[in-house]
Image (cartoon, rainbow, N blue to C red; front, side):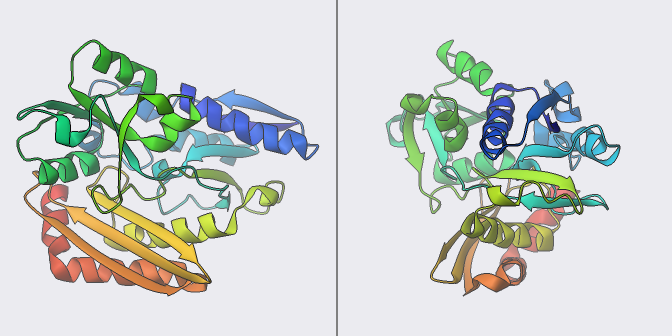
Length: 295
């Protein structure tokens, strides 16, 4: 019986159950062990102000390391680029939609000064760049909690990952999906990460090569910039005919500046393509933005 460690949110459990179903279809019995993470316990502070890497993964990784679980299912965007010794990113299944979605109203239809909610510094920074007139406010909680707050009139619109809405059957709530050029997604957004102890070979069949290559390039950008999942960094990679193309941004939190660059290279060199793109961003002015964020 394989034990799958997962957070207890509705979306996290959907993801863990999806992985369990794939493994069951391959003849492997599974059960899900819910693990409460630091990020789950801190619900009243914007994530960017908490500042700890591994907010949603540390306790789950501890369950892997001490043998309470055989594998863990994460949203890949929550997984730090440096894993604890003894753990590996064993598989990345095919990605759902990586883009950001607006719920409530299209951005162009929102009035001047509209109140828009997001829990992400990356989204907030790019939103302020697109529409400096908006009142961008923090909204925490699971997807259903955020949607309820919107429905109660606390916000005129909220920004969420399209993938989560689609996975949980709420695609009809999406008013607009933003292109990566409008709103560069988070590194790994829409993808799942299956993490195991090194040497555990039971999940290789779930890996999707092109998705794994794309997120490797994106994580290469993030690693080289030294950023966690709560900094205003976005990266979006696509793979075609053995090549990987990456778009990435670093945004000033107040929305006054967005540094943007692109790179392309052999898919086999995905991590290096991402690192090269990060160096380009730093040269273009991203270093000053990141230094200010980390102060």
